[in-house]
Image 1: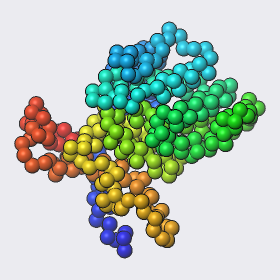
Image 2: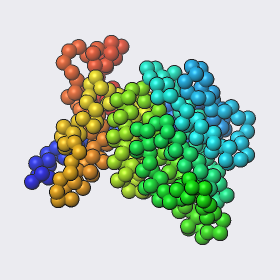
Image 3: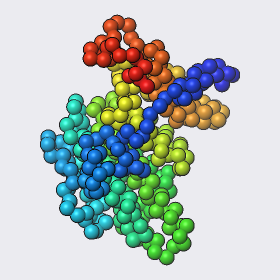
Image 4: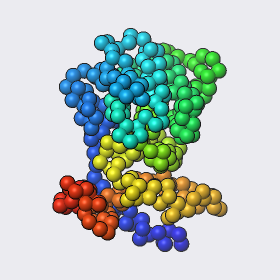
Amino acid sequence: RAGAAQADSAMLLLSAAASLSFSLIAGPSVHTPLAATSCRSAAALATADPLAAARLSTGTDGKFPPWPEWERPPAEYEELVATFVEGATTVPLGASAGQGVGWEEWADGGFSVHLLLTRRLSRQTYIAALDGLLGLVVRCQQTYPDLYAVLKFVPKKNGLNPLLARRADGKEVAPLDGGKPREVRRALDDVQRALEQSWLLVAAYLTLPTAEDREDLLWSARTVTEKVKTDQRSRSLEVLCLAFFWRGADEYRLLDRSLWPSLKSSFETNFGGNWHPKPTNARLIWQRCRMVYPFLEIANRAWLCAAAAARPEGEAEEWWGEEEAEAPVAAHCA
């Protein structure tokens, strides 16, 4: 009966999803880090060497920590890992408030250092990468406890918790040197995915300008991180962190609190809050609805904008700003 009652709404959201058009090429990507980005170091990354963004310094306002200005990358993988963890976990939460001067440079440098980590990940650097992931999670637990509540599921869902627990206790982890190629590839893929997903969450979280935006990001990412299947999780988090909650992305305007409610509050209005119904399959349906809701809700908002259905009453300037008031609504929302 519940499914029948929601049929019309479900069809509306599905049609909205088809109308949402965006490209991850417009933002940084853990899979295509040298693609054209909206950050200022895009040209350097595309036309010069991959260390260009890593040499950027964000010391303009003293809030975002500077990434090292390397002439050559460090020879030791452990040093590179330590640099990544230090740069990713020493940002004050208020650094990105307001205009957030320096957030783009900091994010650029982080994506570039992450690229170096990924390129050098191998049998020989596997243990160091595990230690780096452990350090990142532990530092986030100490510095950003709200973020840690979601981040802790990343190693768990990639099957790395037993290995990290051994490293935390000072115990040895079996190296990959003598493993079969297929087993080695699987182990390296697990670590690479965990580093990708962790950095996506950290980068988006620390560059959002308000506590409300960060709360909405973590609410949206919690079920995605915990419930989405392994082969789809990284791409799902890319869409969430780099297309929706990335303050330089076009779709970020669809989270404007002056025009829209938060994703969490709108979901609870439609589906309820902490739902624990019986039988168990009813709760499973609720969890799956929460998992996909941010993606379909943003699609729905984009469709409403394109249809001019969400324009508030009053002058056009109040919606788009004076300089854009005469332009068609669809041109701003496509």
